[in-house]
Image 1 (cartoon, rainbow, N blue to C red):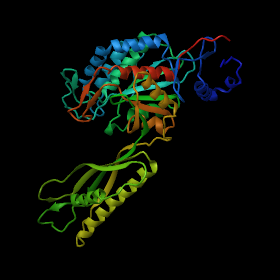
Image 2: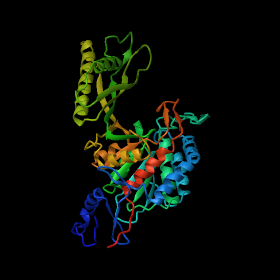
Image 3: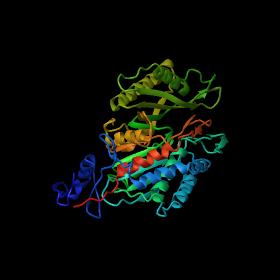
Image 4: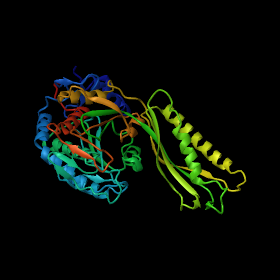
Length: 451
C-alpha cells in the first residue's frame, strides 16, 4: 500500500496524528520526514503487532554486535552491581550509569530531580515514542555486601539479576543503536530509574509518567528479571503499616489492661483465617511484625506490615475490606477482654505502597505483546511465556499505555535474597538482542518510497 502526501487520513488535526500513526503502523506503514511518508515492509511481521526489521542491515549489524560484545555486557552488569543502591539511595549507581551511557555517544544524558537517568534519542520522523528502562534500586539495606563473586560462568551477588541485568541490557541497546547507526522513525528514550522495589513504590516511573512524559510515550518496556519472558499483566497491590497503640503498663502491677501486641496478635490470627475472593489470583500476607519495650511491659505499641495483591481491582478492593474487618475485630476482642480497664487500644493505618492494576488487561493480540512474542520467536525461542507481576510497567498499564516487562536473558535465582545469582549460559546475549529488536520494531524503521 502506497501512502501519498495528499492522503486524507494524514490531513487531520495534530491532536489526531498519533492515533493515525497507530492505524498506519497496523497496516505496515510509518511516517517519515525526507519524503513526508514512508513504507515499512520488512521480511518478518508480527501478527497483530509491529513489523520486525529483521532484514534491515543496521539492525542486523546491531544484533551481531551485541553477540560479539557479550563479555562487555557482563562487565557492565558486574560493575554496576558492585555499587550499592539501597532503597532511596541509588544516587551513586545512577551517576555511574550516566557516565557509562554518556561514553557510548550520549552526552545529553541527564538525571532528573528524583534521580532517574534519562537519554532521549531522536527519531527521523513522527514514529511512536518508545521508552525502555531498567531500575537502579535494590531491596537490600545499606551495608549489604554487593561484591560479585564469580565461579566459572556463574556470578553471585545481591541484585546481580534484579536489576543489574536490566541496566546492562539498556546500555547494550544504547550502544547498539549508536554503533550500528540504527535510525528509527520514532524517539527512543533510554532510562535507568529509581524506586521500583517495595519501599520505592514505583516512584521513578510514577514521576516520569506524571510529569515530563505524561501523554508522550506510546510504548513502555521495562527490563526486569532474567530469561526470555513477557510480563503483560499488572498485579496491583496495597500495602499498609498498621499500628496498634495504648498506654501500656507494668506486666504485674498494671495487669488487666489491654495490650497493643495482643490486639495485633488477634488481628493476625483473624487475617490468617481469611479466604480470598474467587476469580483472579489474589493473595495476602503479614510480612513484618514489631513492637513492645520489654518482656515485663504490657505493650504500648505494635506494628505489622500487610501486603495484598491481585490482577483484579474488584478482588483487591474486596481483600482490603476483609483485612480491615479482621483487624477491627481483633482490636475489639482485645479491648472487650478487659472490661474493667479504662485504657483502650487504638489502631492507625499508614499507606506504604499502592501499585495500580492495569487499566486494560493485555493479551497476545495487543500490539506490544504480539511484537515481543514475534521478536522472541525470531531469535529461535519456540515459546515465549507470558504472565502477571508487579513491576514498573504497572504505572503505564494503569494509564492505558501499552507496556510490558521483559527478561534480560540468561538464567539465575535467589532474587531479593543475598544468595542471588546469575548465569549467562550459551545464549545470554539473546536477551539484549531481543530488547534491541523490540525497540527497533516499536519505534519503526524508515524506508524510502516513490511518491
